[in-house]
Amino acid sequence: MLLVEAVALAVVVWSAAGASVSSSDLLVFSLLIVCAVVHNEIARGIERARRDIENNAHVDLSSVWLFAGVLLLPTVLTAVLITITYVHYWWRNPRIPVHRRMFGIAVLVLSARAAELVLTLCVGGPGSLAGGLPLPMVVAVVVLALLVYTAVDVALIAIRVALCRNPGVTVRKVFGDPANHMLEIATLCHGALLAFALGYHPALVVLALPQVLVLHRAVLLKQVEEKARTDAKTGVFNSEGWHRKAHHERDRALRAKDGFGLLMIDLDHFKRVNDTYGHVAGDAVLKAVATAISSEVREYDSVGRFGGEEFVVLLPGMSEHDGIGVAERIREAVTRLAVDAPVNGSTTTITNLSASIGVSTYPSAGEDLEPLLLAADAALYEAKNTGRNRVVSWASLVKPRLALAA
Image 1 (spheres, rainbow, N blue to C red):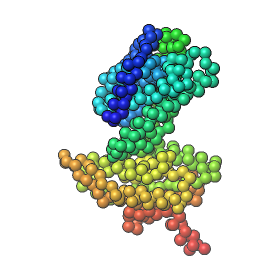
Image 2 (image 1 turned 45 degrees about the vertical axis):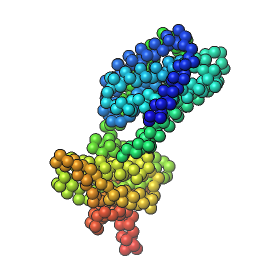
Image 3 (image 1 turned 135 degrees about the horizontal axis):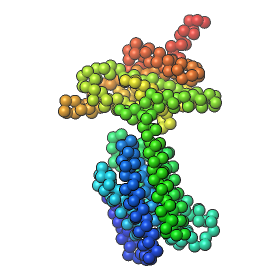
Image 4 (image 1 turned 180 degrees about the vertical axis):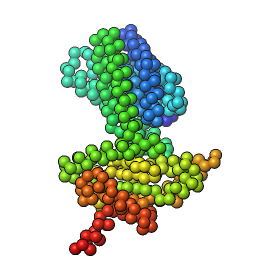
């Protein structure tokens, strides 16, 4: 992090030494600063709600003003624009640690500089896009600058996440949501359009502000909808959210004549955890188990909390054999857990956890969701009744009966 900050500072100093700033640059810079600050102030309540829902890093939409500056302003003014915008943002939203704030500014400065190098190599520098160039070339240069800006930003943050090795925080978790990538790209595209509007007349900057605020509210609404489908204790789908995903997958599998697997997972003797350590510790165990399950499945698999200590997993395109393999990985991951939980004012490590798992597959166990759930539940109870800490498939229960019938 210190290396990135040092390089960013060197870039700004080097750029400032040979910078040529015109009065029109200062006018555009001033307008972007004012709009960025007004945007932060008006959207403050929305941002607070988004942070409360997401509880982690999210796209803040300030890139609208920053990327317009990248396309129009010299490096030194772009760096000042980034710094003022985010110092004001973090002043009004003070929960982010100072070292992360400094690193975030440095990353954006380097991303902006990389995009400006693209502009310099292709068209001579920022502010040169409206110089009578062919339209296809202008579009190509803007897209290339946008992609380079995004790539440097994502790469530097990914390296920091990978090196920090914080428990439960992975590069996949931070950058795994395609919706966030699309939102950031849409924000940068809006910034590019704003740059062309400013090139036509600086007063047109005011037209961008209502659109950004409406986009803010639309993103908040989407987050609220997603939150309503999420279990508050574990962070996975709640029962309603999981059922919705499962019905969509069943419809897709029916159209594509494909299959999918379904796992029903129940923690063994979970009542003992609550009785021994308390319900707060029990909630910590549930969260740790949900994280362990999610880490053993694919990004597009759906993990849900079915109720109490019971979880369910949807595995698109998964055969029975592969589903059993995934279930075994999950079972082993649960047995390896050591959960630090608050108990009577101190921290206690809870171990010796285990889970019983039932497996069913579409369409062999049923052609609708309820029969599949009943089949997985029957297999789960067989695992419970035959010793716990086991994986049992519905097919293994049915085959002996078919043999006897034959």
